[in-house]
Structure formats: C-alpha cells, structure tokens
Length: 310
Image (cartoon, rainbow, N blue to C red; front, side):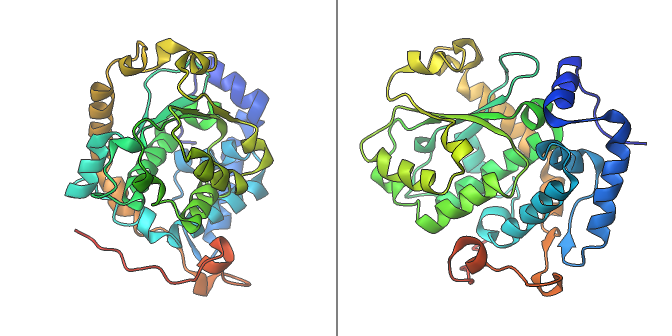
C-alpha cells in the first residue's frame, strides 16, 4: 500500500498533465527507486514514499533522472556540511535565525494548483552576527519540510521573491563564487524543486555584480525566469497578485510576524526529523566507479573547515 497524501483534484490533474503521473504505476516506480537505493553501497537515503515521490514528480517520472537527482541531493549535502549538518532547531543560533524570517514560505497560492511563493529578505539578518552558511542551513530546513508536506511546492513549483531592501555590502561580501556555485548546484542539480520564477525587488547599487555571478551558473531555462523590478512593487503585482503578499508588502496574507511565528512552530515540530538527517548522505569510498569530491563538484579544494557547533 502506497503511503502518500491524496492530492486535490486540481493538483491530480496537474501531476498527470505536466509531470506524467500515473496513479496505477506509482507503487511500482517507488519500488524501483527503493531497490536501486538498496543496491547503491555508497548511498544512505530515506526510503519513505512521501520523500521519494517528490523526486519522481520533480523529474517528471523519469526513473533514471530521479536516481541521478536523488544521488546528487545527498552527494552535494555530504560535500557541504556547513550548509546541512547539525540542523537542530533548538540550537540557540539556529532558533534565532528562524525567528528573523530571512526566508519564509507564504501561506496562500494564486490558485489551488499554483506554485508556492517564498519571500526572501537577506537584510533581516546581521552579517556581523551570522554567516550566510548558517542562514542557508535554516532555509534548507524549510525546503525539506515543504518537500514532504506541501503538494503545491512539489507539483506546482516555487516562485521566489528576493527583497534586497537595506542589504549592505557586508551581505554581498559573504557570497563567494564557491558558495554561489554550491547554492546553484543545490537548487538546480541536487533538488527536485521546480523553479517557476524569481523576482528581485528593492535592488540596490552593486546588485548587478552578485546577480551576474548567480546567472553565470544557471541553466538557460532558469535565466529566463528571472525578473528585476527595482523599487516598483506594482511591477511585481503584475506577476504575483498583491493579495498573496504579507501586509508589509500591501497584501492580504497577514503580518510577517505571524507568518514567521507559524513557521517557527512547524520547524521545531520537525526536530526529530532533522536530528535523524545526519545519518543520511554518501560514502564516496563505497561509490562504484569514480568517487566524487568537492573539487569535481564545485571546482574548489576538497577540504572544508570543521563545523563549529554551539
């Protein structure tokens, strides 16, 4: 018996028409993935249905592509411990970042089968207090939760809004080329998420430098989904209906404070899940064929600094 959440009628239709989902084949496809994981000596992966179906859906039911994506999901995470390991929401620094709401999924979608909207506000954190790696670690926690429980996110995709109001040069200086390469790999090659658009608002001077660095690592398809609105929120509203945005952006989705508080509760409720996560990943010594390393993946030296755990 397949243990996955039933879909709404509109998401069922979208999964069938856009992702090639055939309900009668789901069990068989999940079993093929599980058997492949069992026969992959280097791979320690979750095998529950709701987790695995996100990869099938994200890869439009190409089993070979789903295998590649799942392998890369764990490979990139293993090679980026500073972004993934020790994601305990009870850690005081982690909890403090969660409460800042640097990146928050918004509660409403345009239609019942529309993408999930994620609001990102880098200036919500002080770069003198927190590193960009710590901030991204928290964002991966939200992504992991949505991958398991948000069907709009998995099937409809995601739309990002990056608000650069009050971002300082100190924020930009935390973005090294290596870090940018890791981030784009994590979002493109190593995750099943479907990016449907990215909107930049309140862009400051110097933005083009970081923007072009990110663009250089992106696929052509993702480059075509980038929109720069400057300080013109009316321009954003033409793509993202105003009613879906928080009150602070002129919308009807409630206050940012309440949205962040709800996400804090959700992330904390997943504490056991995140503590379990440390057991998953890849062991490159056991990988059949040529092992992967940080240099081959990111074009950087293979050793990362040891994590400082509070």
